[in-house]
Every structure is written in C-alpha cells, then in structure tokens.
Length: 266
Image (cartoon, rainbow, N blue to C red; front, side, top):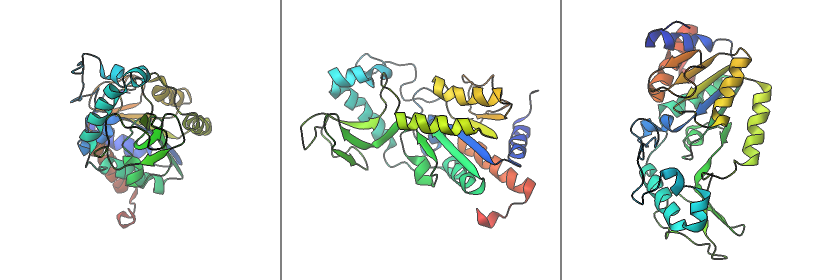
C-alpha cells in the first residue's frame, strides 16, 4: 500500500473491522510498555543491547542451561524483571482487546508476555505462549503455587515438600514451548482469522511471525502497531507507528464513530 498518514492508517484499520467475525491479536512487551513495564529488546529496553552485570546476555542468564547450572543467576534476573513489573496494571490497550473479544464473534490473543495483563483486563481467549511469571512450580515434584510477587522468596527458592529448585512456570531460552499452547494456536490458525494484528513485538520468533505470514498467504488483512521497525513490518498491510494503547484506543473510537456503535455498551 502507498504511504498513508497516521490518521489515515487509523481510519483504514477501523474500517477493516467492519464485517469481521474473527480477529487474532499477537502481542509482545510493547503493549505492556504503557503500564510502565520495560520492553527489554525494544525502545527503552531494560537490557537493550547490553550485557548484564555478570557479563552475560539476558538471554543467557534466562536460559535453561543457566537455570540448571547456576540457578541463583537465573533467579537474580527473573527477580529483577518481576520487581520492575510489581505494582503495574493492565492499560487501555489490554482493555480494548478485551472489549473487542466481547463485541466480535471470535477473538483470540497470542501473547509472549508473562505479566497476566490480558486476563486481568477481561480477555478469556488468551494463549500465554511463554507462560506466567506468577505461577511457581517445583522442578522435581507436583508442588505449585500462585504468588502476587517474589518479595517473600529466598533466592533461589526451594520446594517446601522435596527441597528441589522452584521456578516460575515460564519458558526460558532453550526450552520447548508448552505443547497445550501450541496445540491451541494450531487449532485456531487452522480455523483462520478475518484480521490479524501484530502489536508491540519485534517478531523475532518464528511462531510469532508465522500467523502474519499465514494471513498474508490467505489474503487476509494484517496490521502492525509498533513505534519501530520489526521483522513483520514489510509483510503487513498497515504499519501504525505508535504505542499500543494510543493506537488501539484511536482505532476503537474511530470504529465506534464510523459504525455508530452504542458507546454505553462498551
């Protein structure tokens, strides 16, 4: 498509919602940036292009091998990340996606985020492909516990039942993605979507880029919301170079204006 102004892009994105029955939202750290959370890789990232103070990349620190051999280091950095998230709440971007889930026939969210904000905002059809940082599990037995934060934990924490290492139920670098999440994603992609959004993600992982590629192959429109260029920027139909909350709010308001939706219902 020829280059459009940002208001024109918002208008076209809102127009694409007309007649939609199914929408897929793919979200990354950028959607939670408006809640005050760091994006790690993106603009204003906590570990953006830097080694940690222990001289390793954040990917190495948060890897399965480091968790296995030096769990205190993995827990040091996962605790730093959790502390940065502590006290934060979902934002308008999460709210808009939840509203669309109630308005359209079938809406799913594939998120890389482990903060739980999509469900907290009201979304129910959420695929947490990287897990949930607030769910703790034992690396040896069936013990598990949900926590509000890590403030009361020793580092690294040990299981109260078997004394093995406790870990967050998240996917560390070098680990397999959860099979149940992959199965759900595959099932939904097979059904297809009328419209696909890629929001706040650099799309470095194939399973995050693949739904956009699939939509393109099927001739279904795609929209990217991101202030910077990403791996899918050249693939999508519309690039909206804004933050997630502002762009989603503008799209939703414009959609309401165009199609005169009863605002009191939302």
